[in-house]
Image (cartoon, rainbow, N blue to C red; front, side, top):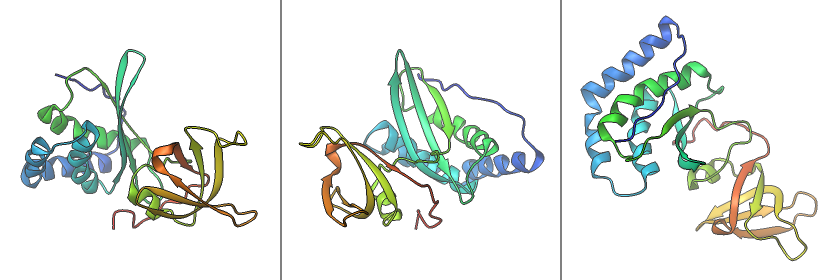
Amino acid sequence: MGRPALLFVLRGERQWQAEKKAETQWSRSARWQLRMAEKKKGSTTEIVRALAEPLAKELGLIIWDVTFTKEGADWYLRIFIDKPGGVGIDDCEAMSRAINDPLDKLDPIEQNYCLEVSSPGINRELTRPEHFQAFLGAEVSVKLIRPLEDGTRVLDGILRAYEDSVITLENPEDGQVAAIPKKETVSVHLLEDDFVEDLEE
């Protein structure tokens, strides 16, 4: 049975009330989400995401991304949260506390792991279709798995479209457009972060 490690920080009365509200929502009307997550077939990250989203919503947060990676000998389950205006340590602590018990009950991870909750960072990574759709028109940096013929491996440009897992990138200097299959990229990051409030719409 995997057990997450948590970071505890001091919090104020308002933050405590928000946590209790999330816990109450869990105990009264979100138990079905646990049952659905238990039945859900897919990756660990998708199962955890399905569990985390209703809890985050009660705290006024959105789940930006969930990753489960091995670094050295240790496994890390990372939940990236966001909200208009950005998140702080209190938000991360509240989300950690809200999901700890449901995650322990679901127990989707066999090995020991460390649970980390944080913001996406200034240059957030775009990984899901809704990420790309939310940031159409934004400047992004695309890192390729294999370099182009001229040796270029990183392309910066304006994200013009994302369809069928293909990224359409425009060079702002000459207007040329390139179509890049997402499967041929290592990562796609924003060059400038501008939170999109209706991301979950």
